[in-house]
Length: 121
Image (cartoon, rainbow, N blue to C red; front, top):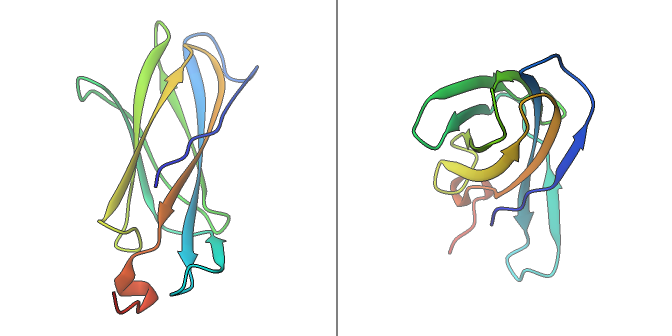
């Protein structure tokens, strides 16, 4: 389950963009009747171009947020990956269009790992 919310604003300097990523982990009861969105500290987040060029890395704080500055010369589609054993499958990927300057915010939603939930199937 990947969901992305994009907000553009005016921050940063020429040819740099502030990329803010917020990670939300979803945990649902066994019957799926109730779901909770949890924050997670210490999750590694990377931003790369589609050809694999690294743009930035960060680690989420207690709010589940990391901020990085990336350098672009033109608008570009960026791949953002959150990696942690807390995430079902070990990672979650989202794509976002990023301008060469300003602020781009992304909320990335992922399912909490069954191993962490203790879910029996």
